[in-house]
Amino acid sequence: MSFTLWFTGLSGAGKTTLSKRIYLDIRRLGYKAEWLDGDLIRANFSQELGFSKRDRDINVRRLGFISHLLNKNGIVSVVAAISPYREARENNRRLLGSYLEVFCDCPLDALVERDPKGLYKRALAGEIPSFTGVSDPYEPPQDPDVHVRTDRESVEESFALVMANLRGRGLLPPEEQCVLCEYREEDEAAWRAWLAELGYCRSSARK
Image (tube, rainbow, N blue to C red; front, side, top):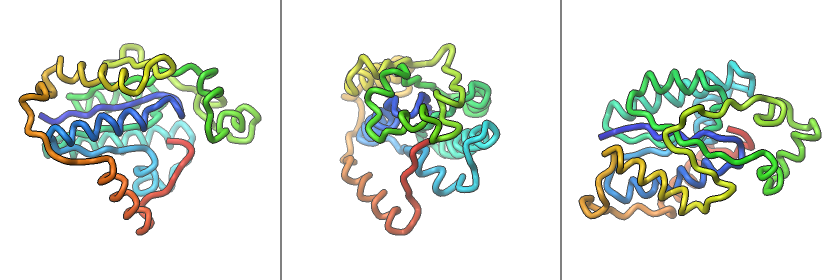
């Protein structure tokens, strides 16, 4: 069974870390899956887009349509993107059908405190325009399928909540019923390093 698992939340709230952990485990369980994180998609499908509401909505729409094509062909799509506007996310829910939204919830003060790259400090100083959660709005999900609080939970605790939800919905069977395969984080990192060498991958402060 294919489905889309969509991680939304502010920059630095843990979307990338948690979604990658989930994606790797879905692969380990023997499922075909792809991990669509915002950096990779912007680098290859949305290079011309900025960070206006219109451009953000277009980016989210593209992510949704790519996920639709993957699901149509039996591939699980795991998406990590801020996707700040509720209407754009709901449009994707209507398109995809089998769509689960994971809200990575972390208060702004906690994000400012952890802020390893100093992005929030710069945004609060007015050095980064249109920064979601500071100078641009973020509309949190009103009824997310999974609500993880990344300021209070470890990655493993949040991971367990998401996996339990997937199994509770029948989207993943118990682990003992799966044919396990070997797909490691190192394999994903090597693939992305190869993409970077070819110019298909770049880093971005915002997704």
